[in-house]
Length: 581
Image (cartoon, rainbow, N blue to C red; front, side, top):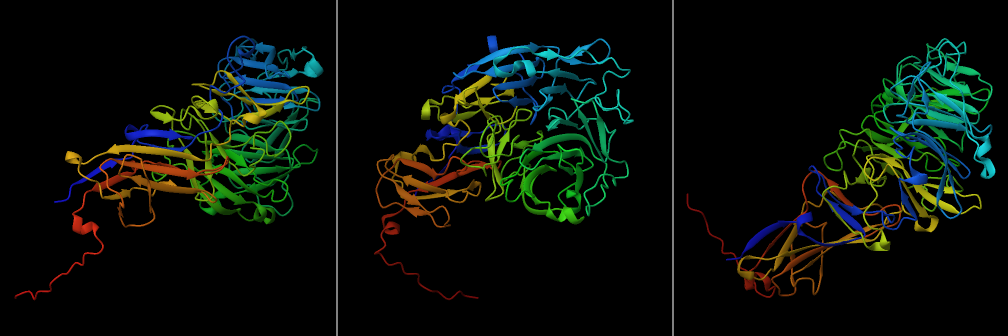
């Protein structure tokens, strides 16, 4: 009689892994590529001295700003700081204030998530979502190696906590910014756009010039004001806004968490911006923006085609129909709550990039792979980041670095960087043009600055990877003649990549290819009693195969066979009998 057994390709049975990691945290089963940059191949890794303060960067995408070699950061619990990136890749702290935010006539606050700077006039502003108040500053004295930073005095008008509606005549009271830990400030030229946490400017877009003090309210409460000619009335009242600025096309993405979708502000830096209403609710993908993200793969040639966050998913849209009053066209959707992929139910998942350009600095896209869409940590989920697989409309991300076995050797990378809240590493230049990647975040390995040299390419994937599982045996060390691998439906292969399963019954001395796309088991051509399974994947720095889901590990079933069952030369005959009635 043949002997039969089954075993999981679990982390407990993992023998080796190269270029990748495997986790089994809180029901998630994931195997996939890791990034080239880790904690051991950084150029700088520090949270002390020059790197202390303003380092708990929780805001996305505008928890930091960059102007040349100057880095401005706001931290959740440690205030605000300005640093200079030196030519050798180190940083010098120019200014830091734990309690930078003015709240009212006397108090201050230190939990910040939104910053925006006017790089023309060298002015900036800081706000947060959970208390009222703002602080402005002048950093012109920090240019060209200078160190004079001016924190403006507390506002003296009758409503000093109001950024919009304080000294101005807009009639609105805008005194907080953003959604939870997602930033609600963005700069377009000298104009600072703000989206408030509370519901006080539905169907309207607020902006202020720090240079002149001018406040403007674009649109009106009926949704008919300042619209681009031919576009639809804004007919939903959204609030708790998150904002992006597309510097290539001079437009602000003004999106709402509740009761709305997004407004595109065209010509955002000019004196005459126009609003374009993009109603995803009319497309059937939901009318809320729970997930925060924006990514335009080709902002020059196809600016109207981009990815944006909505209800529990990212959607690939074309807003060309919105220019004539219709709903956007939805081309693809990637769910963030899918047991066959990822189920990030407690996170407001972050994805995309702060900057849309594909060359120069500052830039947070991958220079050689402008279609790579990164995801980022939120509420302790997706701590190590990941990517949207736009070929299969899936996501690869490890939920946490806990319960993870990973390659720590390749490129001297060490363990993967992780943060509970984060954004992607950003490429910035020092005064002499030397470029470095700078990573910031909040929680875990956040609360610090990680800096890599440009050529380290820390956020590129190790595209080629493999894992080996075993060694599995039968009772009494019986020969293993037949093998069948199941539960492979969560193994996804992006275009231009390959994923091949190999099996060995002689403990890896020789390998035979297993056809994972067939429903037929594999019969070994060799004799052996020690089974190993190997998954070999070829990929690229922007995408690679991965196994991600909540339906268990892959499983290998194996058995020995009678000699007759293995001999193809033996003819089997089945005698026919008539059944008696």
